Length: 478
Image (tube, rainbow, N blue to C red; front, side, top):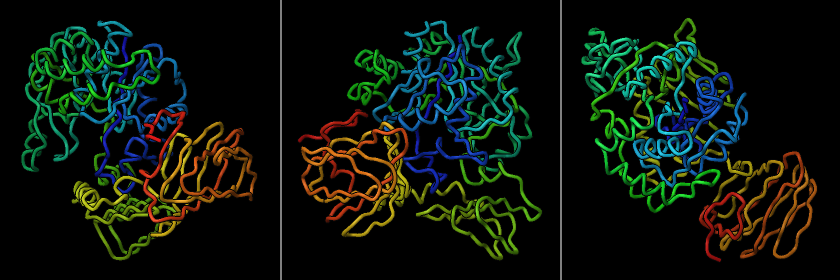
């Protein structure tokens, strides 16, 4: 039995301003309209046994992941397990938790295929063939990683050096894992012919990986076992115990296990893989025009060459420029040299240092109940457009430092203000005073849209005191 395990975490800082902490890279939409999370699950279902699978993600991403998965043909929620991390502790604890969960549900002989949620693979048939080869090798007790034949001397990837051929299989023992090289070294790797890009995907039997972790990183495994024992294993989704999970060492699976284990193998292939780790890599997914430009959205380029321009609703015009990356979003614009695309993460570091919300949130923010879009944000007021999905309900809450006015634009809303409940129709409004419990609900089968006007001296999300919440978000004391 093969169980795909999807790891969905990280902020994707190199793809800011589209990828942000509250809406990271797996939820970016590609040229065909599908997100990377959607594509990864579809790929996982193509190799899964009887549609079974598992996703490890943060609690904040569970609802949007679940909703995205629901759009994938063949997805059956009852056969998919969600493990929710209270905070990120890197990939070694995540793989350990997944292995324990798969062991208890499917047995120690089951195989698990670990795959990031934010990679792209274009040749699915070759990918399936590589997975089948890896399964055969894994049955011999190897921990298998997937190498990708390098297409050019790439400095943004780690490499795997292949060793001896494994008898009876189209695979090699791993001679070494190599860190991201400089350009001259990358050229030497390409010429040598026995170096592959490290794809960050793995396949192994559950008992093999647990035994390996017992040898290479017993502290990680012990902390994971303690966390697993302390967690409610019958819950759906399964939220990992926060106190014990915080004791897990923060270390990657590559460092903790693969670089230390005795029996590691690599299956190499060319299946159209990309980790889309920068805007330069993203641009290379599109065909270039005669001037070497790659564009999307509303754009006009005049006398410009070798540029990647991603427009949005606004027109982006460029005149007489070359070798640029331009990415437009409603509240932020990125302009970068193509060869410095990896350094976009430094912008995010500066935003975080300045405590700027642009590092975390888009103008439109997604919530379990729907979304809101910020229309105006001033010192004395904030205006949002809320869209609440059918059957969804916001938490019962109050605010100490702001009042709110709600006006229904479309649909019918059920509203509670204080102890009173009533219905609001289109073009009707209500006022919520300070320190007053209130709640908004959509009891209908169509979206409702509202305009929310906040007035006060502070509009931060930490001025929300929750009393009841159907999504299990942390309650604040009354």
